Image (tube, rainbow, N blue to C red; front, side, top):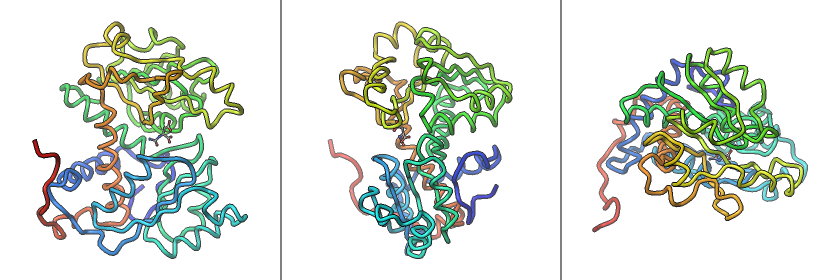
Length: 337
Ligand code: NCD
């Protein structure tokens, strides 16, 4: 799969070669993302950013990434604010909105909906999450973060011992991540969840078929000690048939400084796609971890901008033209002491 002029609906079509190329482009975005330089390579281009489910970082980082390349962002948020609420089909909406945009990012509560939308679109569509199914850009930024965090400890992906924790049944980020990990071989992967929220068999099979050493468990003690990367997730309460059922699992696995010091390797990396549920009855990643060097959650969100900039640049075919449209930043960046 090449990216230019293509939809990104699933990680299924992504190869290791494409990932390596994409990550090089993502690295080249750092001067623009950290505001050392400005590039206007997408000046005049329009992103249709359509989010029909709650979102903060995915929606804003898509928009931010497009703006940082010089493009304009048009947003549609909430099903009730769109003609889909009047019974319009995804196909018709796609035909209309793709006439107003050069590229579209979309999130929708139904599995398969973004692919259905893409079928009617005249421009590339990026899946920003379709129900419990997939979240390809999150998985790419998660994998980018895993590479970066391991490299900062003089390790490589072959050294990865990853524990996925929490709601593995409904979490689309871990579903997409498992498919990407299926491109590698011989990793150690621990899948820790309440039994009722176990990773669907099709994703476990992808991991075992790749020759990874996969362990499945339901206690923190089974997942933490051997991991050098821990990926905590939120109980996806919006996917349960009732709030009562979801409440049974909220707060099931809590990570805090005491548990981290007691059970984890020194400097084990902690990731989370966010949002972390910080309400008292959940508190899945306590604030007392905020000062731990291993807490990578905000490096992960920063990486989201790099990876989404790289995706836009590659899909729109401008990844080799960034410098041509570049200039220095003329404003003050950051906080003055
Ligand atoms: C995730 C999602 O929406 O799937 N969030 C995100 O995009 N960063 C995870 C979640 O909502 O729990």
